[in-house]
Amino acid sequence: MQNSPIEIGDFEASEADQLGVIFFDAVREGATEFYNIEQRQAWASKTPSGPNWASRLSAQKTVVARQAGLPVGFMTLDRVGYIDLAFVAPKHQRQGIGGKLYARIEELARAASMARLHSQASYLVRGLFEGQGWELVQEQQIERAGVTLTNFLMEKHLHDPVRRTNVAAKSEHT
Image (cartoon, rainbow, N blue to C red; front, side, top):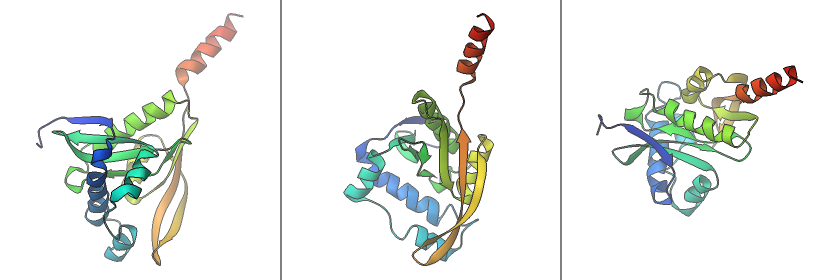
């Protein structure tokens, strides 16, 4: 399975509980470098599953990274350019999967003519976003179950250089 290519595709409702496990494991196991056990337990007190979790994923554009047909990561995008969830299974982290998921999300956002992407990024995804041209708006302290966690309000303004170039070229010829 490790040698199988990563494929990025659309979310299937039957995968919701598997994505809940990826979320839980990514927080509990994959975030140990940045968040202590108390913070990770507050962030992910249990594995999300069931109809409410499936509805949360279905209400957004959710893209899934699969290896050998099995989900190994996912990312979501809502109608206003907000990336709510971005998680890769711990044993698959730092292998470029997050970048592949993000590339698909940005492609979808551009196709929908979104002007901006934004997120409240964890330490885990902050580096990925910065590598994709995102800007830090502000560091935030948020509270979950009485525990304070740090995250980062980030954004990326999307511009279509092709469209701008075409408009500029037309105005030069008029």
